[in-house]
Image 1: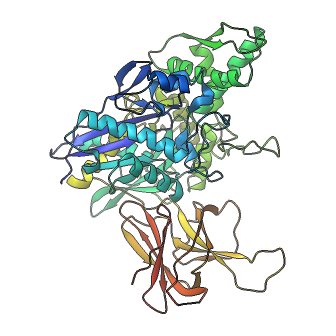
Image 2: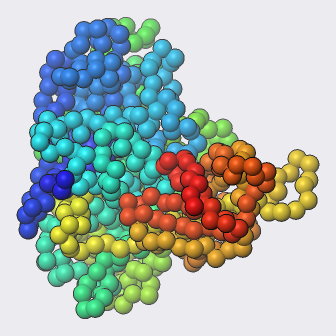
Image 3: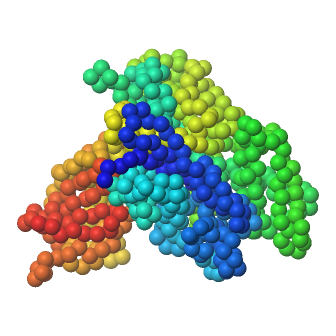
Length: 609
């Protein structure tokens, strides 16, 4: 059955949204689905976004049934506004930032580990399960509004951070499929979705706004992450086209960090009043400060907000304690703390205070987003110019300009938008940087852009080119004499270079490699955003720690042919990147027609002839 709608889903760290457009029209009309959610026990409401918070109810709440949506299991987590609201009172039962955990390779992302640090009496979910639950609520909301148009039969685009590596993308894909997404749904990078939203809003006028050689710097600062992307305007056959040049690393700095900064400030204020907070009050304060920050930074927000905490312990017996914070206080704290003025060659400070670090999400040590932007631009060929004529990248024409496209709820604060523009203008010796985005679009641009992207796949339109954001490598153990206590050296062979386009395949021009079959084996994959010149087949016999990072280790048994006793089969590699962005590494036997497939999301081997 043909799809009726193009659906764009923004699975946000803080808020999730769903946009849609009919496919049977010549001009897309992007609309946003109202999402039903609990705002209080027994109280439901339709809202434009779904906070990506999950509250795990206790037995009393489950028995009462006050926190279940119609038709839902009372034991299911509560998702949305009420979960975010109660997180200040029950932080040990609240899951926040599940999306960020999907990209954290130092934990088992399929294990029930969230809420992180909660006691054994608290039920837990894995990052994949938590993400599935949020997406499933969006799917259910769609069916409530359009029961005749099954979600699984629509053209669906789900956005992910540009910095997500292939494993984080496949874990997101796994969660989405479990939530009821169609098998053919598409993953689209969030900064690209923001650009598509701008293209849809401007129509053909975008070609008059930017010119050949111009560069669009997308700065997407959401609740938990900062995503950086460079898109260049090029010309092909007399037409302007867009090409993604680079994406930044997965930076865990954003609105959540601002909440913590405000919480530290508030804690000091509480201490001045003689109130020392215990551990759980500190967590509760974090959530309370988030609500205050959102109110005080909004353009129509209050001039002051009250931050209140419940008393919990010998120093605070019963009742509540409160302080008042003002809009000016919050602006000074966050603008100077997160958007400080810095030089164009500045770099973030990643030094650690202690040699011992608590396990948890790898938040950035340096919260200065302007320094992260400066390092990103420098690492990708941009140089400041005192004459204000240098384009980005350096080989572009000198009259080209940089344009700034902002995204994320953080930039609702006019002072944060203005400070970033001022700093980049200073780097260009006073040459103003035009801002393409509108403040009214900051919440909905990603979901709306994803819906428009799906519409263009059917109707045609401008597409952003660029391929994979990272190069991918397979680790190959070097042959040689064994040394007690020392593993054999590892080589890394590039099997998918940066920029490999979706829907393409490549033969890896390397020598034969022995593939272990019939017994457990470990397959190690690496990725890099630093080694752009590497081509498919490039072999590395050594590398610096910041050049390659281990993306995944697959431990499995590849099937051997019946009656064959050989431990390994000589193979050559063949890489394929599907239209949906799924990376497959095929191992073809050089002796016969057998082949095996290593795939990140399925974790299976296929033996085909």
